[in-house]
Image 1 (spheres, rainbow, N blue to C red):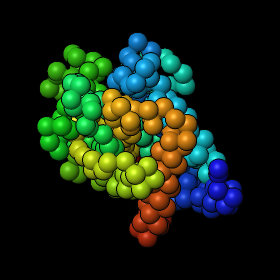
Image 2: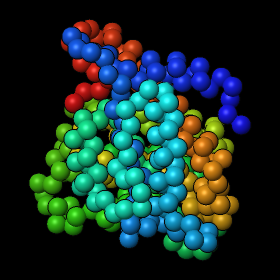
Image 3: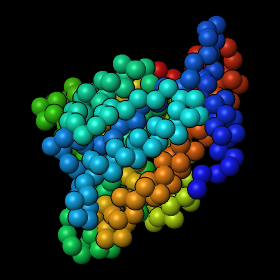
Image 4: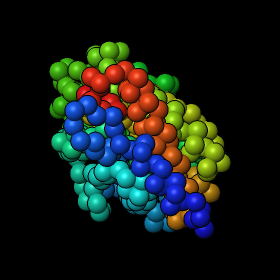
Length: 269
């Protein structure tokens, strides 16, 4: 049952979603939510007929509803079961001049034994080097839909962005966003905590704002996979991510206000 205080919280949260502006009318934060996969790209398989593409879209829609209720200007990279390339997702985000990008996915394991014992939530931000072999494997799976010719070029967007990561504030803020979202997800769902990770995800590489990819659980796990298909569990996931976004924006707004009037918004572009 929704909390009786939710309407009041939504009104208060509106203040977090308004960026600091200088000499211009204030506008709501622009947030792009990316439901992973779609169309013929089904993603990971869960119990029965469950597919990652469906779970990702359902959670993304619930997350959009919560952020819009709090005053956000929210876009989805796909509204239905349609195929959208990774390049198109990046371009769409930048075309919207987004303040935040959140990609929603569900994880999986390849063997029966690993599927039976591997569960939990991971939250990623972009890095040239993966946190470990497991993080690299997740990135490789999600990057399978990336354009091969572009990914193979030395002058690719991924290579260019990664060369400049140390100097980009968007990268620092991506880390802050991940650490704002992840613990709230763990508390809300009581899922196994697989931590905040780093990996070279193609879909995060060209986005010109703080960006994270959330693996909301292992759809291949017998119990966790079933949870991911339930509306009440999806609501917990969406609410936790929304709370993390609002906390991040509030902290960023406070930080940028201290910097002075030259700061034009909640993120550097």
